[in-house]
Figure 1 (tube, one colour):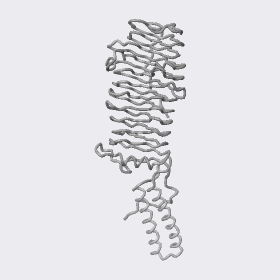
Figure 2 (cartoon, helix red, strand yellow):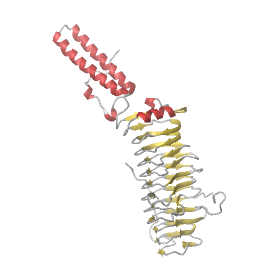
Figure 3 (cartoon, one colour):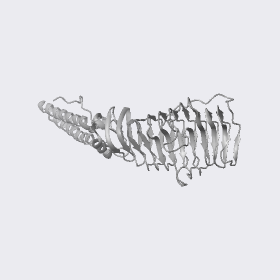
Figure 4 (cartoon, one colour):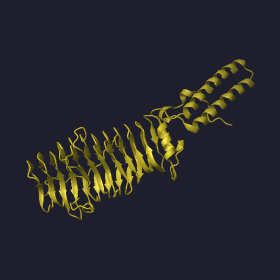
Length: 404
């Protein structure tokens, strides 16, 4: 048997950390080192040089000890900061095998701070539960068919596709989901009670039977750079009258096309939010399906921001064009806040305000059929400088920004 190491190198020359040799490859290398060391001793013995035998024996002993350490490292689960390839540890990803048990065992033993790597493939699961402080990554794209749950802290999910399942990050802290795809009629992201979430640069495609992103009581989170195509309800966030939730939420730079209900809806009556920002979003080519079942109220609203106890909301730089159908309301605001610098086209009302403390200024409300701005309850506020055509260049469709 030929050693795979020629010449033999001491242990400290082997790379560790993210490039540490693991699994069966590590065992093979260890065997090769031991066999190579044995051959050194045998060769020296045949030469009848006693001092050479002693020296080589010491060298062989050191090499064999190094190989034992290397094998132990190879067989152990990766230490923090290392990558764990799921196919190297028993997952199939063939689109047929149920990988639930294999994947659950892998993530449970991976260790905090490590990266779980999904090679290309379709991984069938019922529900996969992710622990805290773990990074899940599919560098060349991989699909999970089934549900994924991450209720802990500091979990990152990058570049995965979810086909038909629910990703649930409810009650999590500092969870990030980026550059991923949600496909299928019922594929969605649920984030009830999540804090510090970052939902960045994902694609939501064909989620027509569910809300693509939904959550009650989200806090201090950002939803940015996502693209929604042919979705039912795209972003659907709800709050209670709870001053410890609904703070510092940013919804920005998202693009919506072919929406069946509303691109963004935040509410409901008696909901509390603080410093909510909705800016630089882009909605076109609506496919509104009409009122909800059993209701007569229109759902053809681009940006429905109606937490009645909302404080200091900012709605700015958003664009909406209803398309072939005429929309009902471009922007609606309840609670105090500003509606500034938006461009809304082909809706009956450019904006509707319901509460005191509003400031609706310098917007462009084009082709409105009934009114540019409706002060529904005749409350105190500012309405000024709103036009029917832009004096300057129109807004541009937002581009995605890189994320860490």
